[in-house]
Length: 200
Image 1 (cartoon, rainbow, N blue to C red):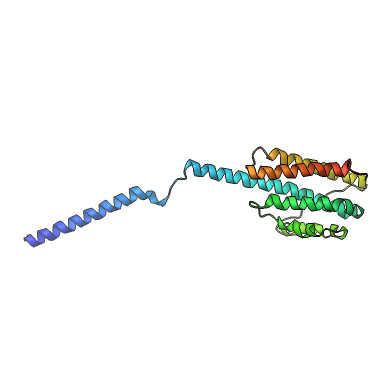
Image 2: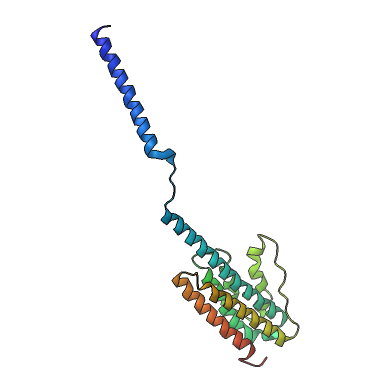
């Protein structure tokens, strides 16, 4: 073998060795392109999911209350002057509770809440139709035939929603907790106005 042939052979061997070395280094550093999330990242994801679930529960409670107002107004239109301001407040609460973390129909309650009238009692159930169209319709909310009894049932629903918001304060982030506290206090005031605050 000539000197030139030996040099060529050595160069080829060196190149092959360098290639193998680079391959081993990249495999060891890359880890196959996957990286395990850190403990901080896992905790942040857990907190975000818990907050989203809390917001969804709070919005669901507020919208369930709004549907009760609509059902009472549809059954007892004569109560509209008394119930319309309270319903407007509940609709605003439902929208505020859904902002920033829930996309389930927060704006749906806004049109009827913006300009509530006694006549709005009948179309207001259509407010829930956007979400209802994506699944089976919920059963209609039962309403007592007697107006006094209907007001008592509505007051009880206000207290129930208020209690749910109060319990959620324990796990809510600070800003959302303040909102929940405000909504819960308003619900307690509504319950008073519906029963003891004025004659039925």
